[in-house]
Length: 141
Image (cartoon, rainbow, N blue to C red; front, side):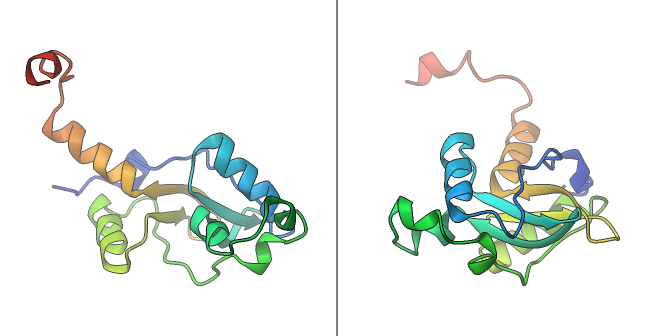
């Protein structure tokens, strides 16, 4: 059921930051791009991940974030998958560890994409309901 490869549903053009970027940079991206996970890369290699929750739980003012580097709060021990692994593997990692995103890396540990819980939900929804449901919405509302 979830045997397709991750590269078929992953976001390939991932917004990233470098370890020396500030949490202010991350906060701005979270607010303007409406995303919740920022992979941190150095020379194309994945070195960490910062989430909107990482920033929120600090409870600091927006001004304080300008002086903090993402390297100070990023998670460095990450679960990753490869693009040819199955979507089911990502679902398992996300459910087992209560994550909401898993970075996708190649054999050189270079970031090539990201898969989120939304991506998997969207994948399953489109499989179950391949046609648009617009025609059903007015009669059920």
